[in-house]
Length: 104
Image (cartoon, rainbow, N blue to C red):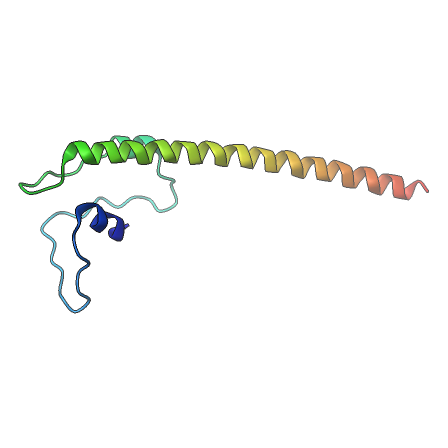
């Protein structure tokens, strides 16, 4: 994530020997097990500094990320539903095969 931000802001990577100081509050911790939702991305606001990033550009990027997250989450739900359907069909087929084998 940091490398993405550096590329977006054209900042060089900090030297591993150089101490990095921060002059802003760290982001509020999020629960690591809760998935990030598209609305959380769209509604996220950042502090604007005098020489900060372009807020319009950030907002456009966040909307693009949120749209891609929506697509990915929708596809994931479809795959999970298909997985359940296939597992159920396999169980039914196995039961039918087992029952047919016992009747011989």
